[in-house]
Image 1: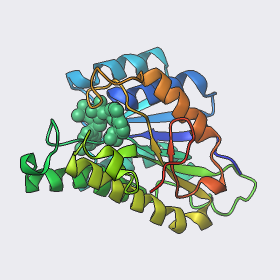
Image 2 (image 1 turned 90 degrees about the vertical axis):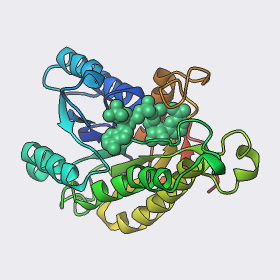
Image 3 (image 1 turned 30 degrees about the vertical axis):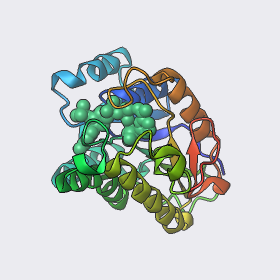
Image 4 (image 1 turned 60 degrees about the vertical axis):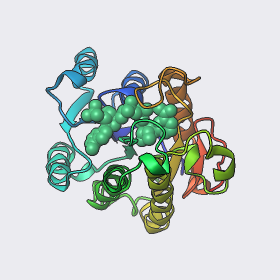
Length: 255
Ligand code: NDP
């Protein structure tokens, strides 16, 4: 069964960049039966202003949830807040979008400290691992064979590809970042196996090189085009896409 953009959808790192655009397009294009849980580390802070405005423009469609993916207690509190609202219905789609890249510039070997490695791993890998583990999906998901599939989407990157490393390394060394995303790919592959029986499709998606704070102003893609592409890919996912790394246009990237 294909994945459908409906039901309860949770997006992490939704206050700016790709996460904000994901919430915007989901709010604009999904029907009454969809509700979006848009997560931000600081729902009341100035960096969440644009998300708060978006929520006001779509009354009843978006709930802002406080979530720091690197903090286990914050994850527990966020899960409780979402579960209080959705009850037994469970999530339909989880988009693990929040991510960091450290150190800020090249991420070359000499410029990278142990702490950068640990911090990036904690946010980009342990965060998605913990969120998927807490069981936000309905226990009924695997039982109802007529239902559309649920999905976990892990936002990865083309530079996580081990096979492509000789081509991409000189342009973007980024040790902590590319290593963390390669680990996220393995997490995707493991979860794809683990959640098969629950009818949950787990796939990693590369959004392209996109104009955000992380992507920088020289990036060729706008958030609008990247998200249009990713949502089209997500809504056409089926069993054959389990445990894959796809780009925003649906092309397969080799591990
Ligand atoms: P941005 O840096 O623009 O935004 C990152 C988002 O993640 C922000 O909302 C930020 O929140 C949030 N975030 C960071 N750390 C945490 C945390 N511990 N807990 C919760 N939220 C957190 O990045 P993009 O929008 O460009 O990137 C989104 C995803 O796409 C990332 O996973 C990134 O790796 C991936 N990607 C991006 C590419 C690009 O070219 N832009 C290319 C390939 C992949 P806050 O405001 O609080 O910091």
